[in-house]
Image 1 (cartoon, one colour):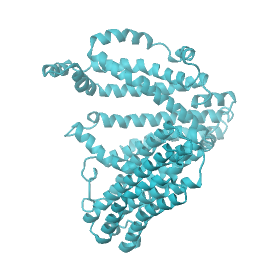
Image 2 (cartoon, helix red, strand yellow):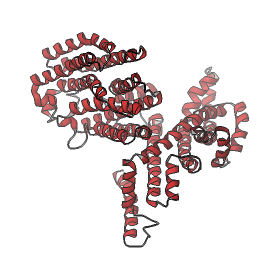
Image 3 (cartoon, one colour):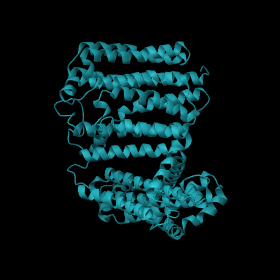
Image 4 (cartoon, helix red, strand yellow):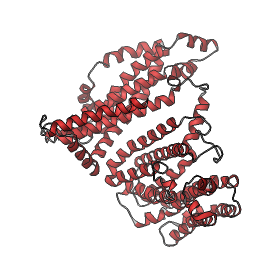
Length: 555
């Protein structure tokens, strides 16, 4: 397995090396075949100036939207064709007749109907993948053993039951294969569509480079397409492993509920408020100033949640493989310690989550430019290297600082910048309360694990400061959230309705008293959970106060 993995990296490395040598010794003309070293320099420059991420992001978004619009109805109709001869008789002749038509030939007709805007590009993708997927899904259902349907009908299954309990799960492998084929075809098609019908996107970038005879830029665009195709393939492969695990592993228990519960525990969705609150806060502050774009907010939330999920999974993986989390020291539910998932599954899922965040981020970069690009890169690096690498942030006393900065000021600023294309001092100050509380949540975890972390050589601020100093840090972080919010309201940065968050102060004081009184991990474990809940309650109340002031015209 390891040897094959290395070989998969070796073959492209050898190809690039031979290409570089052939150009350097003069076997290939540098004008027509620029060496990989020049292409990668151009590739980096195009990323740095925001051009390549913007165009790739636009192309990926067109593919994604087109796949949703064309693919979802195609899957439903394909399933219906498989179980209903009437639907099959109505749809199959039309689908079989249109499917062979070269899809790029449909573009002029689509442009005549919808014009040259985004609608025509997305519609071309949707029409193209629809007929491919509908025929493949129908064929997948027809290959299901008829006895399954007979058994279901003998137990009184209705048509909707046949659809839900027999046709859908039995044909799931075929559906996934159809989506893979459709996605690959859509990526190929969007490049061709952007050649002739667009002023942006990666296809337009490649065509423009060809017209200017900028071969290095043209190849850089092709490399970008190849990387996107590879990333999509890896993502779909992992989704297939999640949706049809029986294709890969014969588990003793394939119960869907257990499957969902296991991944729910691994992903820890309750922690996503740490990503949601700062993103929403930045957008609401911008909205109060007259700048609000719901689509950008939605994409920013999805991207932030994906990065948070990636951080949760990779942190669990590295804590487990380093021996930090053990059955003796860990309190709570951990899918790795319980043997519910293998380390490799958790790591791959984390990397897939980061990839999803990066794909969404490409579109946001097309709107926000290089600033959003670097902010996204920092977010992924902080999430991954929080517990990864020889100088992991969590093991060098930098965990609270990194989380405070990224899940507080940087995320709020990034969300605000997406909406306004600017940064102001007030928005930086407004991010401090939520930053203090998310850092307090992390510090509560370190307080609980202080003795076990110290025994294993894990350096956190709690182990460096000692119990008394760590307690003071907790008081400062929790108290700092309330003091900073009060100060923001007094100086006019935050509207006074945000002070509604102060109704959580009794909970905060109770947590401080418990930290001062208790030392045992079992006693401090509820402090971690309740501090996380305090961050959620405080954050949503602050958001509600700011949104209310915005609606009332008070900000």
